[in-house]
Each structure stands twice: as C-alpha cells, then as structure tokens.
Image 1 (spheres, one colour):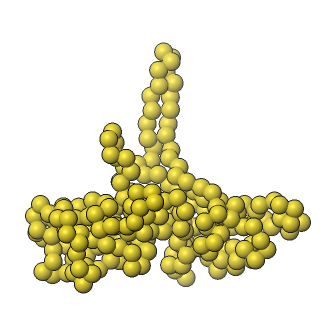
Image 2 (image 1 turned 60 degrees about the horizontal axis):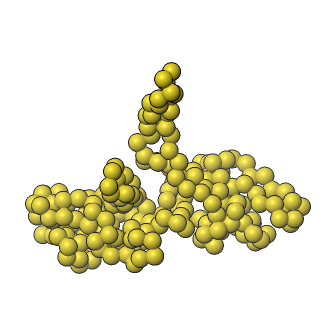
Image 3 (image 1 turned 135 degrees about the vertical axis):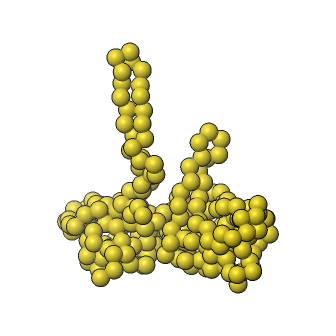
Length: 212
C-alpha cells in the first residue's frame, strides 16, 4: 500500500475546520532576566482539526470512511487549507508572477515551487509539493510561458522546462498556483459518541502535515 494517496479530503468538511502553522522554539530565561531564543525547527508544520467541519451525520460518515481507507495514520493525503491555498495575495487571482522560484543559469531546467511569507525582516520560503492540477502558471523574465514549454510534477511541485525553453542566465523564474497540504491523521482512533454529537458535540479528528 502506498504511503501517500493523491486524494483530497472531503472539501466541504475541510473548509469548515480549524488549524494553522506550528513552530518549535526554545526560550531560556537567564539569571539577569534576559532571554535566549532558538528555533528548533527550520520549517513550520501545520496542524488541523477536521472535527470542526463535521456538522451532520452524513459528514461524519464521510470522515470515517476516509479514515478507514487511509488506515488511520498509515497513509497521507491532500488537505485544502481554507486560509492558505494560493500563491496570490488574499482575495487575489493567481498570476504567473506571484512567487519567485529561481533564477536561470542557462542549464538548470527544474525549479521547485515555493511560497514566500513576509519580505522585510526575515522572509520565510515554504516548499510547495502538492500543487492543484492545472493551476500552475509560470513566467520567465516576466513573460508568461506557454503551457507546452514546461511540465509540473503534481506530487513533488517541481517545474521542469523542456529543451529549448530553459531560462537563460539571469532570467527570473516566477510561478502562480493553487496548492494542497500533504497531511495524515494524527490518531489511530476516532471516538464517536452519537448521543453527544446529536446534542452539538464535535468529534476530534486531528491531522498533521507530512514533511519531506
């Protein structure tokens, strides 16, 4: 059985869920009262609770079926983050110049999709490995590339230019895209209390991002 299933968690449940990025930082308070802070993780890791999106018995049945097919924590899958699933600015449309993904040198043909956060003090670049099929647009030196001049690996987020279309030295390569987050269930047990659920209780369905 594959460790990752290229299938999207039910979208109507995902769009009503809760979650976001997590970082791991050590903070040590010195005798003087000053602090020393150290980042244990170079990259953030996202956590979600799909239970907030389960409002009906039908949705609960969908979630259980999806959980069983993934064999609990065993197999990963795609998750659509309602807040952060586009290369564009909030509310904007995807364009081929949204995100800088590299600079040509005349020989490099492959570039990884990334999304930048911030831009003044210490911008963070996040690797994007699960672009939405058909959503990726690419530009070289500000000019959008024809769809036949490159391919996109939807399982790794790698953009590869065809021979004769490799970016020349110094040419900026940019991209725009929609994307999913690779996640897995963070439990092997879903506790369902139908009496509590009918009264308004929400079952916990924890998910955690899978890092490469």
